[in-house]
Image (cartoon, rainbow, N blue to C red):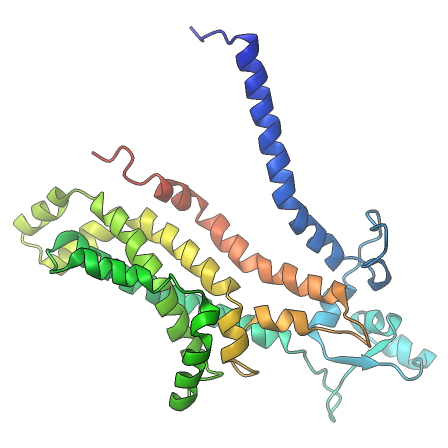
Length: 319
């Protein structure tokens, strides 16, 4: 029989629900605002008071993907009629698309920067989680001399903010020719996420009973076979949770990407604020780039949400 709640308990329950809804709305407000700005006409992006009701358009996304310049004179009726729909959108905002000598549309720098972000974030996450899992397994299953000191040393690499080590890292990278390269950023992000990966994965692996591996060793498996066939499947939720956090950190990193790269390997975070229109910043284009930039990490986290939730409670009722 269900317990009957007192009026005070019901009031507290309603208050808790209202509090959660208010906090949720506060956190979602910036996402709503940047998304709505990405679909606003440019003249409504900075109105005071803010414009809430408007007819959405995709002009900011079109302008984000192509190079454009200010129109010195309006296009002729024939030019406007012959232009594709997405070029007419740019014409309507008083700009034109920059074309090569052969008439090909020149893309903006955003697609390349977006791809750089994918390459660097995915590769560094894979390396950080792989090496972190192996290191955490060693600390969890074997006696290591000075284990606590080593773990503290690994953790200490995250104690300094990136801006403190940015200049020394830049000088070292310049000597080795790693500035403005994908390899340089991947090494940097991997090292930056490795300590987080080791500490998080050690907690997960500690919760896996040793008896599982001992049974596999008795059955004739080698230590590595037991690790790959027994430990890794059991730690899958922990690996997924660690990968999500490492990917988010690498995907959103700004300071190193701004200082260590210029054009060739630059990622999206330092590139998005540089998007300006004719004379003044085009906030709708910046908002469009931000919305597109949010999608991969949101999709990745959504796909692993079940593993993430189980990973955060991993070991709670393990034995």
